[in-house]
Image: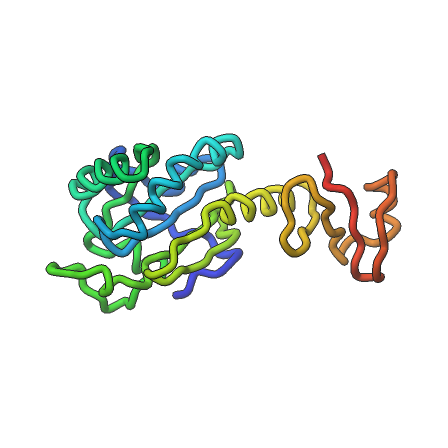
Length: 218
């Protein structure tokens, strides 16, 4: 079944480069980013894994754990990690799931349910496995998106989206187009003007009855 926003992220047990994990237990009370790859030693994914390693301190600041997945054994990941560090200048500093049997890929509906994990296999066989899932501490999927093999993912956008999701979770606000941390946010229509005045005593802007903006809550 398709994994939709608001669904519980499927739990699983898997081998990773940092040992065996049970996904929900590994997340604990934090947020999590699960991002996946169709095969080891692929060029676009090599750049992504390196960039995510450089960004990891930013995710750490946001109480967010990062975990990658590739449709190859963990032993291959260790070799690939050397190439990533050499070419991207940063060592992989988060666990990588080995999913050679496609269990997690199928569980998260990233590949056809009848797909086989048999080798030899090219990245094109698993082309759909370039997804990102943002999971909250409640183990619910908060956002998900999929990229083609030819276009590198924008992990700065993943970080920005995480900021928006965490802000909404804490303050029940929405964010406008191209929002960046520190900019004005939107008061949801579920909040009445009366309640908004109590919540924001310093005032807010009403552009339309359904469009009200306010300074980002601290």
